Image (tube, rainbow, N blue to C red; front, side):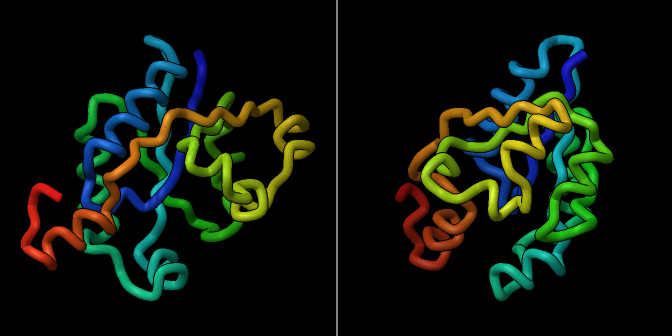
Length: 147
């Protein structure tokens, strides 16, 4: 059984989130498991300067209602995701391909050597352009609901 780990804020759940989680489930396989490490409200505030639109319990409830998600865990260690990753014991960490151009390793506080030692593969999946919680918030503020 493959265990897939992905993480994030998942505020204002949208089609980009669905597509990421669908790809996670595909990698996990029919008997596998998708575990989402969900950032706390306080961690989001410390990183983005403001709280998410939906609180942790609301975001967790939405994720658990998604057929591609098997479990949601709190990213209890904030910027250092390693303890949460180790608690899940995944075979794969899955992130959007937008992270291929960023320093994902530094943000997550690990490197390829650590992943290799843990026997975890990092997989980039196709990122959905033109949609994000920030874009949705901007549309709501400008009254432009269709872009």
